[in-house]
Image 1: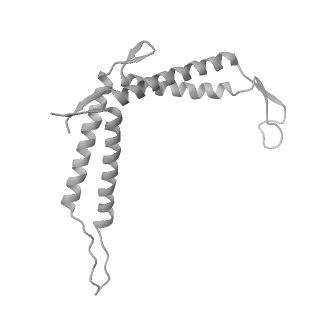
Image 2: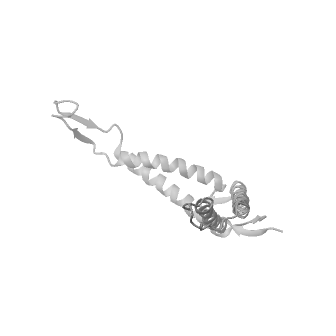
Image 3: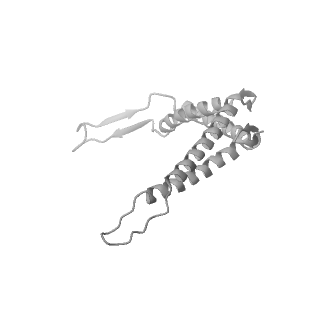
Amino acid sequence: MGQKMTSAYASKLIRKLNEDKEYWLELERTGHLYTAAVGETPVIPDYDYGKVASRIEEIDNQICVLKHAINKANVESEIDVEGKILSADRILVRMAQLNGRKLILDNMRKQQPQKRLPSGYGARTTVAEYQYINYDLELIRNEYDRIDREISAMQLALDHYNQTEEFEVEL
């Protein structure tokens, strides 16, 4: 019988397992070699390859099981985002796409309708040049706001899902 958990809890376990793995990797980094001067009694670190390797393998296997369970739950989920039913994995992909678009629109909405480009010494030309936007600034601002609201709605729905919906994990 497996264990029920939420995505948020599973992610927390993965972070903890990665911290544990880092501990064992550090033991390996600092313990697999030692230095001693000729004639000196060496101080040999407490290191057991079999124990360390076995523990790292165990941790990696647990992380794989948890990540697979999260991925499976993300694919099978049904999350209501303002009346539209989406899976968590689709929300994650869509949010990444929208965040990329939002970045472009953020740059565009910050542009002045007209600006003078640098001229003179070190510039491209000594003649005064102007740069103009070739779009409706208000439309871009509205699009930015719409995308920001869509991302926020998805994030809130995803956060709720991650905190409340449980799935089975065979650890």
